[in-house]
Image 1 (cartoon, rainbow, N blue to C red):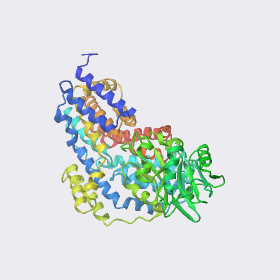
Image 2: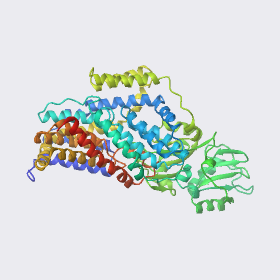
Image 3: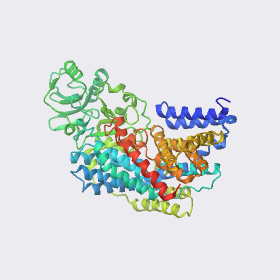
Image 4: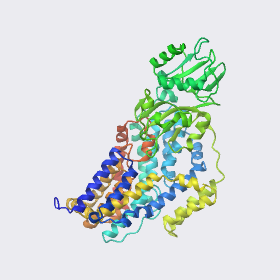
Length: 612
């Protein structure tokens, strides 16, 4: 015993603290931390009370299985091109107006995210929204935070709107049963009324106060201007006397990069324009080379190779994008990318994708020099110059998300896949069957997976690739931590303290406090972890106060889905962090008032709809 606590309780609290610290510092990937939790709980079974079966129960959890299946169903719908087609139709009425653009994005994203996983929805919309913002002369920063927030708000509409809702459903049932009160899993549309209220209020905020608070971090304009790389791009003339004449272009590219860290991007020869790294030609006299580097490096290159610097030759998007050969593309590294932690040189983007990195944006900071040794982090946005062929291939790569496409690809009309009707029908069928209670949601979703593969909407390998396995392992690993808190008396201890304090407070205030505490925790660790840790405490506190456990469970559920105040609180926030050029504090500035507003709206909504 220490401080009056059993050794097992102290150990589990220590595991919780270490887990939270690792999530916040990102010293290890969250899924790896979660698996470490499983191992720790079993190794110390005499103290934690968690055996192998309980520790691995997260892998067989209804929530985990359903989330896995919904990833596949969402991907099947995404592959049809329907989401982007809807975006294109809406874009016809918003051109040239910032207010109409923000309104259309919020109005379209929210409802879609209620039934389709919001991560792919945001991934599809980022390039489209950025393109529309540029056409309207609007900073993309003004639109991307509303896009992320609207997708999060839409996730509160249905049980399958977010992974958090599914985890909360399982956690509520488990916590209620341990507290000795009857409980059933959330049904498909059980909290849709409250979700619709949250979506409407949140959308109204984003279109008014939120719009005023959202900063314009990136100026409207082309991509090279957005990354401010104009001073690092230049053109040099190759005189006939230059020692480069007759040298293979590809060798010049390699030598310049190795010796000077200077990138030779392309060669202009009369009316011809070709990508240097992809060329098998030799350098000719009077060729013009487009290069990237700082001014001193470029002048050094000119001295060594007897070249002539062309000071009046501006290089921008128009000069770097060739309809037949080259393209500018913006990429974002998601948290689960294998490139996170690697350097640009070590990632071998040049060799693997014919891609030259022109600049890296990390929030509001842009890096343009010594890029080879730049360590990549989750949320980094990369402006790359590549071949047109590679640009078409990049959206299929798992290493990053393409958030700004090649020009001709961005404006090309989307053709709906022949599998559109079956894919949509299957998703609707899963929702209806689960809502009617014909079969449990997990079985309905798995049946949907079988159907999308059987109908050819996805191949079996595409179905496996659609699953975000990092999230699945995170879920499966973190769920047993809630069991350990229950088994060692940690939940009873925390809820007892809360109940003692809450005896002098109205239940409505305690409910609001649960919302605020869950929301704050979700902003620094994952929403799923906040639900696992606080759902048992909230339910047990409700029982001790004689309040309605379901009401407290909904408070935790909705709060975990509204982690607006940090870019790391939710994956879609991180996805727009780089493309929007945001600072960390921008999320607090825009999301803080929204989170407080929804704390009031959600608390009052729960009290009015379900009572306390």
